Image (spheres, rainbow, N blue to C red):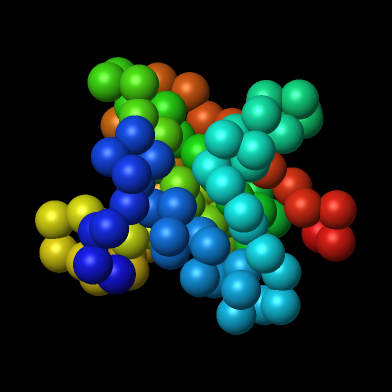
Length: 103
């Protein structure tokens, strides 16, 4: 991924791509964020395929895809590669989980 994301929402194009490959669409990061705020959030018990938004100390939201448990996949802005990480060792202020109705 070339990092063409909005700087306030890094990783959204990766999440959008992953959902498109699964036959679903994500239209805009703000909508996903608003819906995630309205849902019950538990970032320690992720289900594969959930969109996990990690709010950073600068206010930006890193869009990731839940892999299960506390593991997520995301596009690394520095390398452009898709990598995985564990929420227990990642830096963030808040985590919001967006659960599409199909999950």
